[in-house]
Image (tube, rainbow, N blue to C red; front, side, top):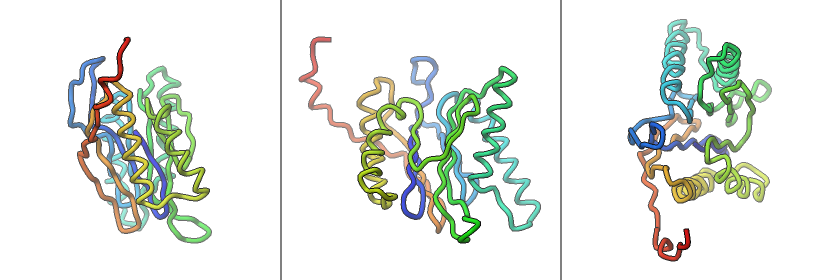
Length: 215
């Protein structure tokens, strides 16, 4: 799973595969949940734990709506809540075996404008915020590709630049992981709302395979 903040929004991409050990059991599962018009939560890892917590998050969103007080669940608040839940569960030796990514647009208290938000939480309750986040195999292969772009720009990329590097990163992950699946969803969070795209299929080129030998 990959998340990247761009000028005016955030992109989150996650594959659709759920494995049972080394068996590719389900190939059409969604790992990104749209919470409301500002917030998205996604996870890699144990799919049952993802379903467990997202069910609670859905109920939290329903509870927020019923108050009708003009407030809603923003990404920073959800990120903080998942951090506490993950730490509490691991302290009871019942960890949620997931790596969570919370993305969205967070109002700035000083300027009143919404800014891109991207936060990470692991099964131990360790959390941080960054403009680039990858989980699983992507943290080793995708993060360097994306940081090469963002650090060379010295600014947040445009949406087009972010889309381009995510497409390349998902392609690299498909090539390098023998158990990867070529379909993924892409969620775009912008001021005018949240859209889900996909499943998008990685268009791999395996012509180079004939040159690989000696293994």
